[in-house]
Image 1 (tube, rainbow, N blue to C red):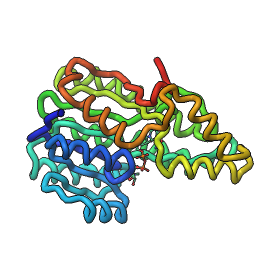
Image 2 (spheres, rainbow, N blue to C red):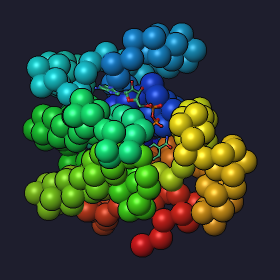
Image 3 (tube, rainbow, N blue to C red):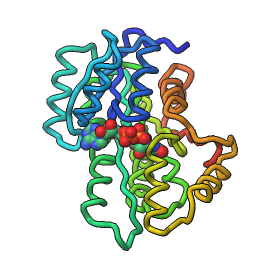
Image 4 (cartoon, helix red, strand yellow):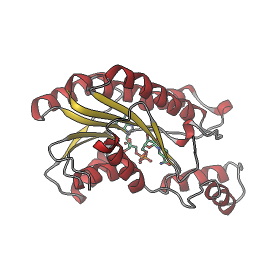
Length: 255
Ligand SMILES: NC(=O)c1ccc[n+]([C@@H]2O[C@H](COP(=O)([O-])OP(=O)(O)OC[C@H]3O[C@@H](n4cnc5c(N)ncnc54)[C@H](O)[C@@H]3O)[C@@H](O)[C@H]2O)c1
């Protein structure tokens, strides 16, 4: 088992599907976890369903610089630096490019890129030696897919940002990315229902057949699969790896 005892790990989007699984995986590896999110209801739900003296919640919007600088002032005064930053918060909407509104474009760019940038920029003075940043991209960065041109662009941006910052922060801080594949949560149901309701697909079976047959490992990935990879990628096993993107997509994306 990876041991993160005395390590301080920040997970943004920490009460969502992948984020919550990641917080739990780090807690199981003895880390101190700072869970950042702006979804009040889900924060309360996570708080009441999971007890650990090593888990701390911070309700903030990562796209607002003031919120982010206040958060890091708090971190500086209460914790012993930062060892790992998991930039996981992300949003997506579905629309063909011709129907995509400027508001949708801006929302996706704001959370997926501006939020990641702000959380990274203001963490830099606080990193301990052998620290790492792990940015969550998506298979959408590499695989063309309809309805998510804005999301695909943002997730390719995550990879570009990862490489540039990896150069700037080496050798003190490693900076890598993970690209999850299709995650088997209600997000999939929502997308399938959306496609059918607009007449882009006929039946659920057809969509599922198509999606599952693109995954050589034969199943959707689950939040716990991604969490396991995140913890592994932050561990000393990868102490010589920086600027890389790891696909965790059951083989749907191979590079
Ligand atoms: N679910 C998938 O199929 C899939 C596939 C590939 C990549 N990803 C990526 O993985 C990451 C996590 O996705 P998920 O499926 O767990 O999504 P999710 O919607 O379950 O979780 C995302 C979390 O981010 C939080 N968030 C959104 N905007 C925020 C903001 N401004 N400030 C603070 N928190 C904010 C949300 O409240 C939510 O809890 C995202 O970056 C997503 O793009 C997901």
